[in-house]
Amino acid sequence: MFEYLAELYNKALLVSENREVFSYQVLISLSYLLALILSMIRAVKDKELFSDFLTIAVVVTKYMLTTLLMEYALTYIQENHAVDNVQNVYLGLSATSLFSMYVLAKLHEKFSYKFGLLFFCVIKLTVVLSIAHFILWFKFVVLDIQAEHAYIHYMYSFIVLYISIVLAVVMLFPGLLKTKLRLLLSPSWPFGTKN
Image 1 (spheres, one colour):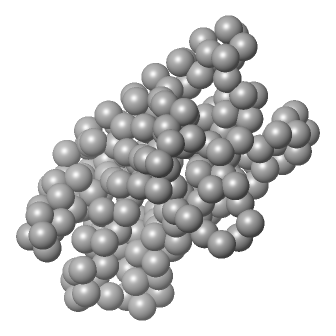
Image 2 (cartoon, helix red, strand yellow):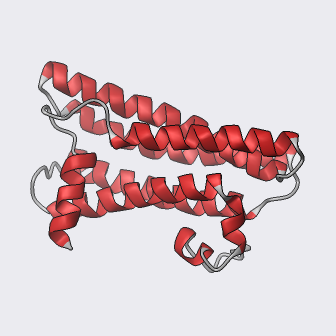
């Protein structure tokens, strides 16, 4: 299991100077874009909560921006063969995730008075994702630990890929959150949310 996570990390998310610029994140971004298109179609046919449409639109926008940020960082690393300052990208990813949730909450307060299951699922998953980005940034930049504690990298890679895939699935099929599968798709926290 540990070897599989190590291989997954090295293939999908390792930031190094030999890294290919095109990544799995681009494929996930395309699935997010498909979710947005399907959401628009469902919204036009009045078959989707406005809350779900707002949630999907914010997540897709945030994901496209963070994917571009990460691809830019990877391109910089390839061209300059330097990783040092680029590791601050993880702090940027964490801040962007938190800011997108703030924007999502404000949009819901202004345009949609009903908070759907997808809203709560996205909030929970994005908080976990933001914490994962922050922990990796803290390890690299604040503690200046580069190679030691590799298990943190493997856990990070698993968390990011799992949450990215789960977000794609729940945005493509928001009805899954009304089934027992929501236990696999959304964390259950005792904070009084509907999940």
